[in-house]
Image (cartoon, rainbow, N blue to C red):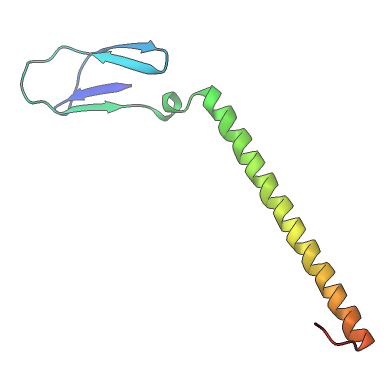
Length: 92
């Protein structure tokens, strides 16, 4: 994690408090531009990564099941239409 004031990197203190971080630094009182840069590995924690992986796997499984259902229904419908045409019955 980096903290910048007016484009310059400055020293700072950070403290985790449950689900928030408290960042503190010393600066001269005036209008300043603060920039906080978080590395990706700190943004996505290992605990969150496990949940993301589980959600992605479940989504892929749902899509695969949906594709199988659609393909089987189309085959069944095609077989039904073929049998009707073979018997020369009117289709309603």
